[in-house]
Image 1 (cartoon, one colour):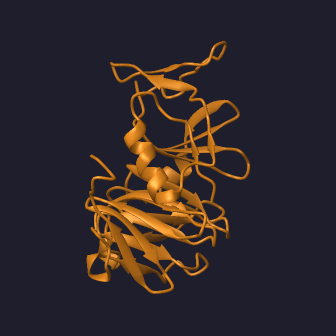
Image 2 (cartoon, one colour):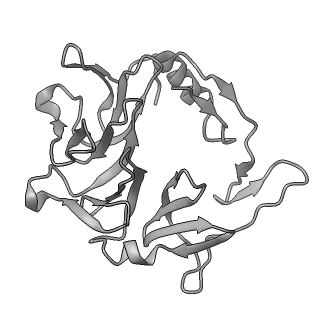
Amino acid sequence: MNIYLAPLEGITGWIYRGAVQKCFGGFDKYFIPFIKPNQMGRFSARVQNKKMTRIGKTSHEETLNVHCFYEDKNGSIWVGTESGLYIYENGKLEVAGFIQSQLPDTKIHGILRDKEEKLWIGTFGKGISVFDPNNKLIYNFVVENGFCSNAVNHMMQDSRQRILVATREGVVLFHDTANPEEYEIFKEQNGLENSQVRAITEDKLHQIWISTNGGVSRLDEAKKVFYNYRRSPAISP
């Protein structure tokens, strides 16, 4: 996995970069950011002769509270928002109506397609919904049918094409997306620093790193143990 950084002025400062340097060995490439925040919390273009086009406004909403993006193999951009699922293609942002009509919740926090072309949608209130390649709902993983949490914070697909899900009740690992009903859950009793998981990533050595409310954890799958990294002078608040 390559790690790229386009730092946001005033946000990704030296503390952030130092923490990533210590945990991941630095970045493979830096990019000059296209946007910068101002003191009012708004973003503006910082590269000359570039135009920023706002695409968030729709006929029925002033703004969209965006949580995640996913680009599929056709170049379409899927957008997960607080109010539902959108797709950006052919220069237009539209509600993904057929899929959204089947979703049990509209707070979208994760979007992925697996190796079988199934579409995975993680929500913050009703778990994970999985759609077949024809966009028909085939699975819904929620607490009511044995899933660990209905609140999904983040989803990622690793180099082995497995899907890992960050929830408020641990990490869920789908080893084989061809059999989604078989998965593994990691919580504090398994050695995870904290079960409220925020995000997950994979480094160059294919190790899984997990950010939680209690610190950072690294999963050693060969030994089936977690190495936990808490607050220290090297990683300041």
